[in-house]
Amino acid sequence: MFYVLDDDDRILEVGGDWDAFARANDGLSLCDGSVIGSRLWDHVHGPELQDLLEKVLWRARWSDQPIHVNLRCDSPDCVRHLELTLDGTEPNRLVVRSRVAREVARSSWKSGLYPQPLMQTCSWCNRYHVRGTWMEIEEALQMLDVADNDSIPPTTHGICPECAGQLRRLAQSEPIHDH
Ligand SMILES: [Zn+2]
Image (cartoon, rainbow, N blue to C red; front, side, top):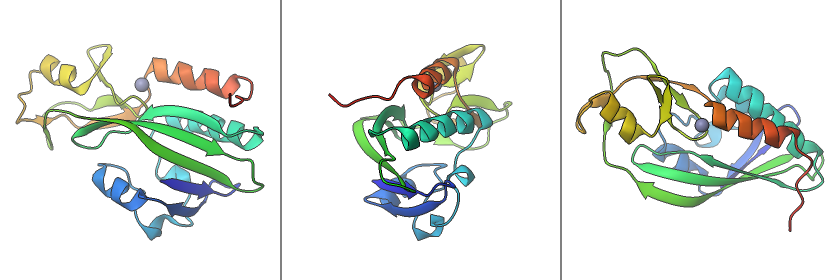
């Protein structure tokens, strides 16, 4: 699956199994041909994440080699580890390729209304911020005493300190060379 951005972060092309992937993922608004011409930032939530992604894209555009980033992009019932390759070696085009490296089913849970304040989630590793600690959804549900068939609290997207640090280091490091 891939998408191509122009210098203004507008989406020029999407391809591969993108449509199926987008439909299978809650909250992933990139879907079908309607995204062509829109800016990537219309589909990325959270100012911190935008800021860091911007740095990664900038670095990819100036690197003479494709750069690689690993991230989590879960579907409602799967934990999904993605490998992202950003290739900015052609002028005026940044090709972002995504490959599912690993997929693990998680116990089913429904999303919906829940009488709780917004819970922060990390857009990169998909962990939840509960009572001062970042944790996997299973732990978070236990912590909040939500049974499997109950709904989870509404969430807001952000980035956890670990992922922020990782991305900051990536954005600041020297260009990565393939071995
Ligand atoms: Zn994280």
